[in-house]
Image (tube, rainbow, N blue to C red):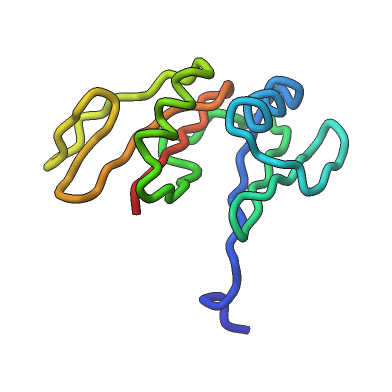
Length: 126
């Protein structure tokens, strides 16, 4: 088995599945691929899957949990999410400047935001 040839699946812990489903489906626009009731929902995202599952440990990760590479659609995606009430995080990252909500390092642009449980998500133009 060569894991480098296999898609990875991201897992995000949440406390309130109803609130999480609203965010991931209605705010982010992800389509449900599978469900285990109130315990787990799997979403299609590109050629991979994002598992959102109920856990008392939700929101304890203080680092980025999920990244979407949106390419040239970064600014439009930011505008769309902002229109849906998403607030973007601002971080002091060495060698990065900020233009509004977008952090920039050379030709790389990135934004961070949180889901309702405080999980850190981001978009990058690569």
